[in-house]
Length: 371
Image (cartoon, rainbow, N blue to C red; front, side, top):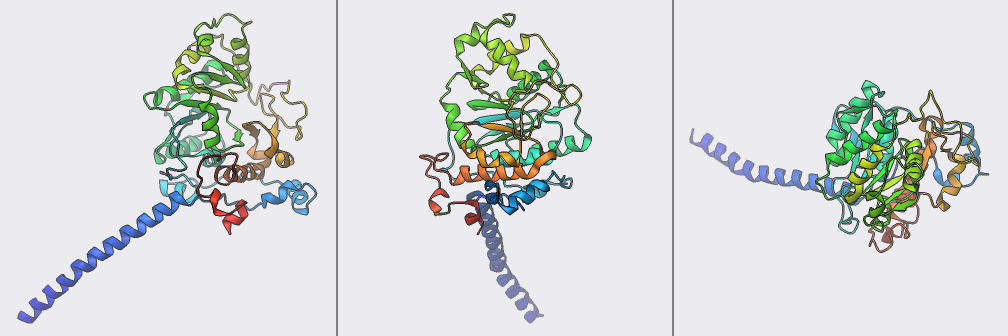
C-alpha cells in the first residue's frame, strides 16, 4: 500500500512539470503560428502564371485568351476558420507597415461572394474598416455568407438591414448606414466604390493619397472644399457639385473619397437632390464612358469592363480603380490581385519611406517570394 502511494505521488510530481511544459509548448506553437501569419504575408494562390500575361505574344497568353478563367463559387463556409484558412486577413501588422490615417472602404454588394472576398483580400489591412451593405436582390446564400464574413472579421461591417439600391437615394442611404455605424471611430477618409471595382494600388498608397485631401471631398477626380459643400443648393442643377455628383451616382458611385468631417454635409446635400433610377441589368446605360474599351464589354452603367487584354497596360495607368467582370474573366481579377500584392509589399513607389520589411528582402517579384 505504501509503495502504491509513493508511485502515485511520484507520477503526480512528474506530471505537473510535464503538463506545464506541454502548455508552454502549445502556447509557443500558437504564438509562432499567429506571428507567422502576421509578419509573413501569404501571396495569392493562382493557377495562372500572371507574369506570362504581360507578353501578349506568348503561348501562355494566347492559350488563356481562348479559355479564360471564370468565377467558380467556393463552398459555403460553416465557421470563421475556413475563411481565414482560405484568405490572408490578418488581425495585426508590424508597426513599420501601419499608419495613423485610418480609412473606411464602402461598397454596396448583391452577388459574387468570392469576388467580394478576393477584392477584400487585395485591400485588407487591420488598421482600416470595410463595410458592405447588401442590396435586397441578393440571394439567401449570398446574404448568409456576407453576414458570416462580417461576424468573423473584426474590421468588416455587414449591416443586417437590406437596401433597395436601384435608385440614387437607396444607394446613398446604404452608404450613410455604413458611415453612421462607426462614426464615433477615428477614421479619416472614406472611399466609396462600385460593386465590381478593382484596386490597382496598395491600401497604404490610397491612404497616403487621401491624407493630402485633408477636409476636402473628391468625386470623380474633382475636389470640393468645405465652403462649397456648406453653400451647395441641391436644386441648382447648373452647379459644378450637382453635375459631378449626379454623374458619380449615375455610374454606381465609382469613385469618391470623402473626409470624415464632411460626410454628413455631403450626404445631406446628395439626399436632397432629386431621386432617380440607376442602371441595372434590365435597364442598361446605352452611352459608354470609354469608347476605346479594348474588351468592347461594358457594365450596366456604360463603364468599360477590363480583362486580360488590358493587363499589360495596367501598370502604367494613373487610375486608382478599374471595373472587372468575374463571370467574363476572373483570371484577370486574380492577376490584378498579384499586382496589388507586389505594390503592397515590394513596390518602392507604393512603399516610399515605409521601411517595408519585405521590400528589403531582395525579392523582386511575387514568384521569387513564393519560392
